[in-house]
Length: 59
Image (cartoon, rainbow, N blue to C red):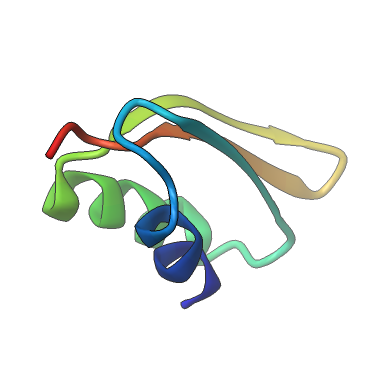
């Protein structure tokens, strides 16, 4: 997953915005954040896009 690689390269506390078109992200992104203790700051749907803002967990 491209998100996992991006988050791995980030520093703790940094924020990434994800814009997706795949509806399965409504399930996958929250699970990803929960499993790795990242904070899901925002989750919304706009114009057939799924938008997520994630803060990387402290290490």
